[in-house]
Length: 334
Image (cartoon, rainbow, N blue to C red; front, side, top):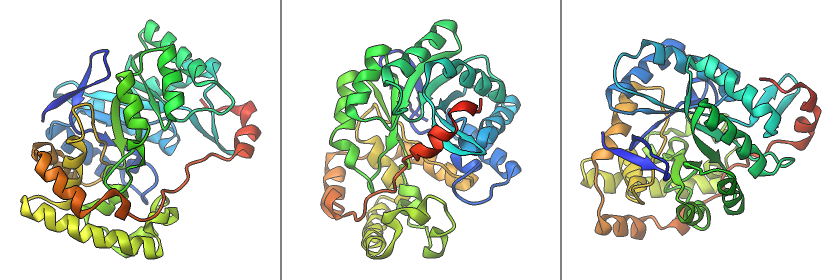
């Protein structure tokens, strides 16, 4: 697989990564043996960027990836993980307090079985802590050799600039796909002005852009079941566009999902999407999208057939309730 560079501080990885959250939460029950087979399939396809977080399955996801890494005998794998969303028996809350960052990082290193994390993200900004303070604590971890590169996730353009003022930021992670293009207004231009790489999660629109998602499957996912884009008239409108996407993909001998990923890759050499799947065959299919080159005429045709304005519905909110955050402040899980 082709390689791409993110940021300006020498981080290089596969053009397509693997979003690993689904191995532990969000899309129904998962089987660890099946997940490990999927991870091996990703390695075999040349995917080297694994994206996880301490909050995914309350540490289970990092431990699972640690098992896969321990069994891997091939080339180097780049691991990205995140801190900042914490879960306790009292609920979910945001914690970007500088004094807690080292403990979160060290716990992730232990679960992953690593000495150094390649790319460490602030998962969400803590509204009680300036972003520059959270990133400043991450800069200390870079100097100590615990992490190699700093990333941020789901920030505003202003917060992105604040983060970059504290330490060079290698990548920003955010939702971006044919289904959700709002980041093109502010986040993408701001990141490029700052020299920050773009890492879209949910690049297949939570499965909708694969053109394989049955209506009956929508309610089985914690994420799709509460997402306005998957409800009522909005879903009907989006499914009509999915039929167009499937036709355009077939003309190129590709699947709808491959065309959606190729569209993202064609947005610039600083883009590394993170499709997620628990199925080895789907992972192989996604990886092959890196070989589907789209030129200006292809992109123009996609835009004409499926303009941004045609997609219906806003995405689900990912806000963490302040009450849960405040209630749990005295017992941060690490």
